Image 1 (cartoon, helix red, strand yellow):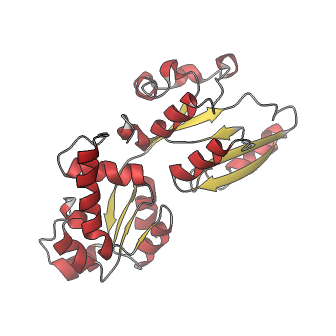
Image 2 (image 1 turned 60 degrees about the vertical axis):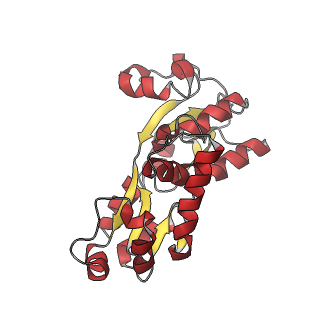
Image 3 (image 1 turned 30 degrees about the horizontal axis):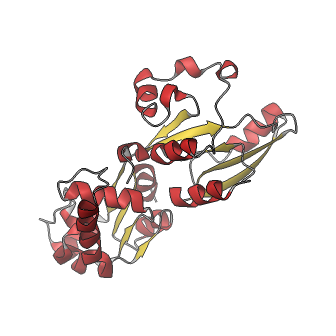
Length: 247
């Protein structure tokens, strides 16, 4: 568990001083659904630089690809806690801040928070701050648990007596061990960033108790499923939950 798990909620863009611009190609690796549909086309039209754009839906995937070496990407967008260890592993090159003319326009408070993982903001620029919570289908949850369902509490997911009943309409969790474990630790009243084997064992026990009632672990599928009623409770990223709510 990273000591700054909370910053897993904030994504950092990391630019490598590769020669992509001279070659008129920029290779980008980002979270799915994190840019507008016309962003790449607008950028290519304005700059003449071709963009190769790949996506992923959890930090562990990008971490494994970078650790394997020779990823070929010029820009990656890991979460803060993963960026920290990628910097320590020598996977991320420092920024040339002289070329980032708008860097001074960023919120100093956000930059200070990001600096907890990246001292002096030497390797990354904050791109997005996100939060994690859960979304639920009001009608289905009320039908199963009644009007007094604990929709304002993590009990809705972590208490087996509720999870078992809600399994009938479908619960999904993020496929992100670092984030799910952090939430479980916090629910138990423990440090969300704890690396204690005893604490982690307690969180594991909590998750295993509800695991039989979880339909799947995925970090993107829940957007459509929650939106169209295939599931009724989804632990996910706030932006994705709002997309599902608008479906």
